[in-house]
Image (tube, rainbow, N blue to C red; front, side, top):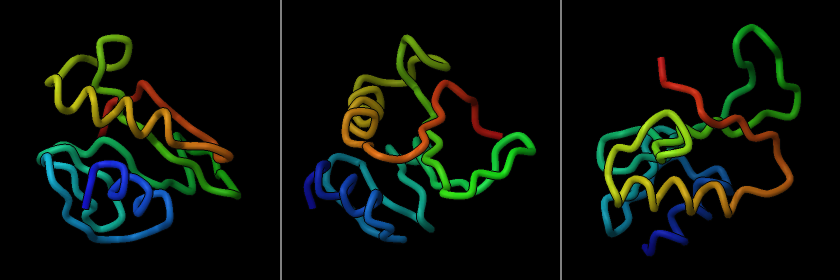
Length: 94
C-alpha cells in the first residue's frame, strides 16, 4: 500500500495494515516506523468527545519536536488528509 492508501485506511477505521516507507496501522493507531503519530480518541484530558477525534502527535518543527524527515512527512500527510472531524495536535504521547 502507498502512504496515501495507508492514511486513508486509517481514516476509514482499519485496525491493521502495513505500507511501504515505514508507515503502518497497528491496533487502530497510525505509526511512522515504531513511533505513534495518530490515533482515534473518545476522550482527552478528562473531556469526553462524543463524535471522537483524531489525536495527532505532531513530530514536526512547529509541533512537539522534530523526529526525522520521514516522520515529519508522514505527520504532514495525515494533517492534510484529515477532514470533518475533531483534530488535536501538538501533544506529546503519554
